[in-house]
Length: 397
Image (cartoon, rainbow, N blue to C red; front, top):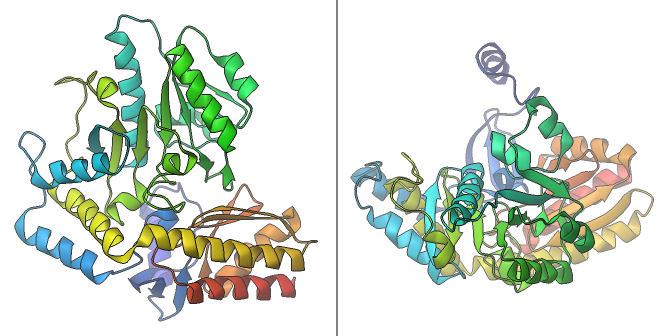
């Protein structure tokens, strides 16, 4: 069956993902994914930080079924109860005053760029530049590629959308030097996930906020991967103790149902007036029902707290593993349940492949870092499964 699926994929699907890992899943439960041949895998990547509730969480599935029985889509020409209630959840649990829903993290970041630009346009100020960081990842659209600080993503699409520039992360001097009277916003990921889990220093984040205050620049925090409890707080900026003017989220917000959100302070959000931005699918009844169910289950099961607790447990275990294999492991970087295990280059690929052979799902960043972002429902016993399998692989190599 897998062979037939691969042949169909190669014949009909655009080859943007290359040769994928040779498995096709047909169902899931908790951290487990079941392949079409009956093999059982442990999902320590969580659909790339999406499946925060694991797979087939009964309360989540029940909420979706109830919504499917009532309404899937109406368009934003009409009021949507779930949309209003999910916006309320985001506002009441963060520093934001308003929320806008779309379909993905890239769209949320696009909305943030547009809001930052129109904010200054309506103030009569010629400020349009957006500064982001090297090694960042903000999406695959033309504008988000221009904001992404990774050359290999940008080169095929040059000339890039103008107005974006990148500076070294965690270097306040580099950032300050890049600011001009045209700077509208500074956009940062407080933990860069796609490049291998690289956290910003708290002092750096605080200085960035102070610089934005001093220069009248908007601070945008990309929380697409770090948001919704991933780091042990609902959002990364809360962990860092700063308040952005705009922040974006997606991934775990819908628990697997596509949804993104762009949230902002009231004075910034007011720059968007009727007709300035819009969406057909964004925030429809089904997607926002998913978001409401995610919030409800987080609260009932204390999943943000679990992320912090099990994340620390995992980090401590992995640090001990690193001490055991100093010739193979370079560094453990983690916050909550976003964890990067940097290996020496000659070991990274083999470790990734052997973990897959052992039915452990992870990702490989920059060819050297094993990244895990497991569901927030993970237990310490399940965390031990990963540590033990990693230890077994390292012992073999």
